[in-house]
Length: 188
Image 1 (tube, rainbow, N blue to C red):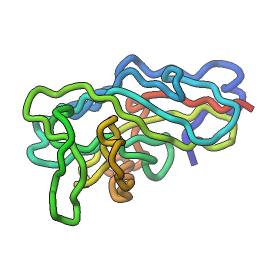
Image 2 (tube, helix red, strand yellow):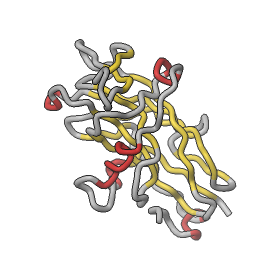
Image 3 (cartoon, rainbow, N blue to C red):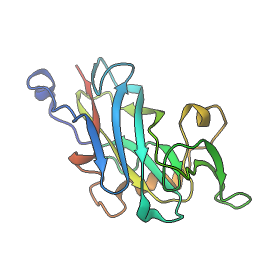
Image 4 (tube, rainbow, N blue to C red):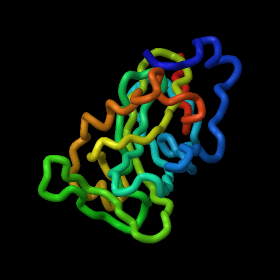
């Protein structure tokens, strides 16, 4: 079940648009969200797969040597739909392999310098039922995730299922409204 407004809200009051920047305190920031080439809020005629692109700045000094992920999905779902960033403390710095030779080997960023904004892309699937579906983001620390920067997308990567399960870790209802990065409004 997804968190969405009622059918009447789709044709009445527009869903509240996300702010210019989403902040996961002490972890990452997201800005410049584009859904299917539009803005952070789009109206579509039906459900299906939609391309979501945005800039992420991961800067987590308290993360130590952990491998972190940024995951995205729809509010109210049990799991995230995609992992889009994988790395250590700071985004940028190019493609690396972390945990090489182990069962949790993955592509990642491990930037020794200042964090850099990086662009990521993924596909999200939205139901056919009319309503406003909130696109949300949160962090994970599942050792493995996809790196969906242009450089990362050029190499084959699996979608690691464990990281998608972090959607409700320590948040029983999943990421809240403060984690909204966009809205997909499915019209009747």
